[in-house]
Length: 93
Image (cartoon, rainbow, N blue to C red; front, side, top):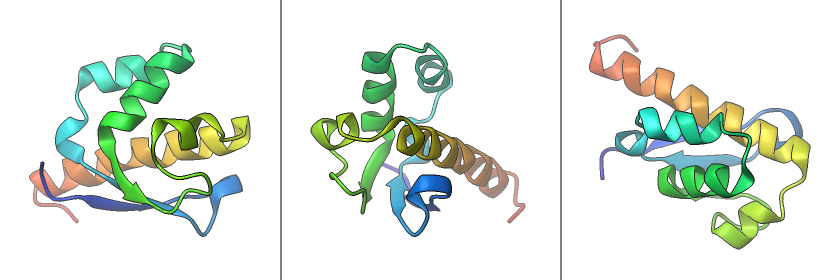
């Protein structure tokens, strides 16, 4: 596990955060997010989220309880972590 990135969430999950392991973010992760199949999306998020304060928790059961707007906010936030990770590896902060 690499250095975790704290992701402050926006939208319906404003004032919440998740801790993301950028080492788990590979092409398969993004493919699963874009699949429009909730099982794959939940699996992908479960691989990268290692902590946080989501209302129902960060486990699969907690993710399943999110409302659609919450899920959208979570996916957008977690996807932003890839940009942060990419910047770190290129020496740009």
